Image (cartoon, rainbow, N blue to C red; front, side, top):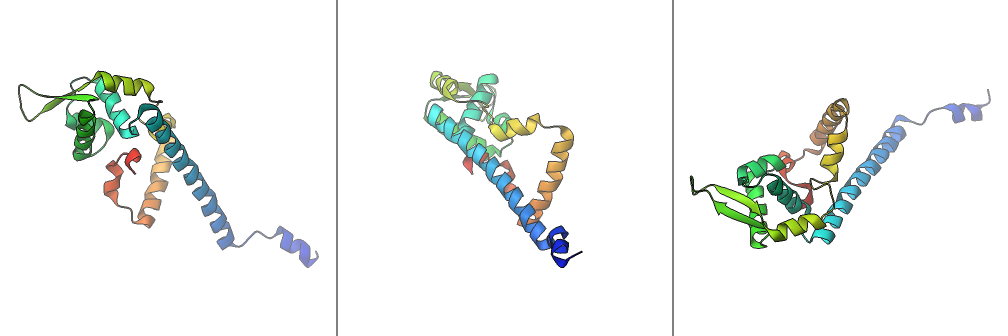
Length: 170
């Protein structure tokens, strides 16, 4: 065989394959981030409030009287994050905060008319496109994604506290 045909059949060096694979995955991350960003921009434009606020309103609509702690659990965010969301929504009169008669420290949350209007204007899914997409995946795929992303997070030395921050706030 002539030397030129050997070069054509030889696979690229490992470093080149690694770089190409990393570039393909980077492009996928860009597509994911762009889909998330586009959805949150549409939410903001349509409803006039952010994605995390819309999600919180949708939970309160579905569970009238929910407390801040349970809202935080439903959104998988830190309680202080949920408290800040509630404060902003109450200030905008989208949400009503009532003190519990049994325990004056506890509050019950209720959707106000302006909050219901904002929800009607907001595109779905209220939880955001990424949680909705992940929920649609097979458990086997989710396990694999989890393990692979754990490896990526280790290399990044990522701040694990950010895991409980809404994507709309990033």
